[in-house]
Length: 389
Image (cartoon, rainbow, N blue to C red; front, side):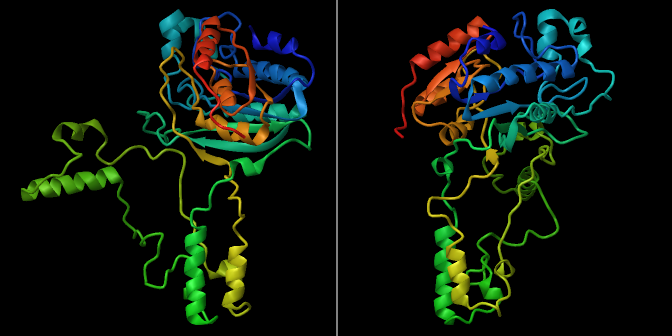
């Protein structure tokens, strides 16, 4: 059933949580009349989504949450996030000319449209409360042949609520402190060894008293990609007659750019704490520094933050846009209780419902394409509850 018609049939405040990923604009023709995503203008697409989610607010409980996953689109080319040829899958079905209207003439070609944030801002205008913009980083994002910009390796997952007081169980998704115990023991040993007289350099967290920083050495001012380093090593070995090593074959040297892959639009850096984080060493004793350090770690784990690295997963069924089950776990665990109803108005292959069932929640969903509904039903038959909460 069409999602808008389905939502209209639901009673007020009948679902506890919503998580969904509607079709992205201008990406694919699913071959069903009334589908969302093929509007001539992306503004019409945004307007239609806002209308659907406005009705969704009525059926969501006052303490409920709404998670929306959306990818972006480039003007006149690129598809969702520029990862696909926008006209490839469309032209194979109905021909390119039918969809010429998708090429918006008011925005320059090759311009990123910012559709996820346009939708989010429109929902804020519709009195939704935006709590988080979660970045879904794809470590194995689809490569692109583009040469004049970075590869897109992330999408947005917006967390909306309808009231200021809503259910949220942060403890259910906390993560272990990776370095808490190691750093705690290291600092305590230095405190005991120095009898409370640590110097500034010894109070730095990255220093273990032996002369080696546990975060690694200074990389220097010459950066080489891993691919380039391997190629340089290969040619050095080959030139000297030595073993070229395994993992690099002559037939594969031409399969990738010799200088490495496009780095993508997500930069990861390292952050280290030093003594300045704790104020002047003269103002506090080393024991006070240790006490403050030990209180920085919440015993149940740390807040996972709004940057989630989740690999995409292949799907055997005939569905082209399946987000991974892992992406649904934190939202469902944190924003619903066992037995609550989790609703996906664009259920597709049924991933949201599958995770909800595994986590002991009830599920509800619809899709305008009958084949996808059947696919989701068959998939759910094989799913068992795996986590007892």
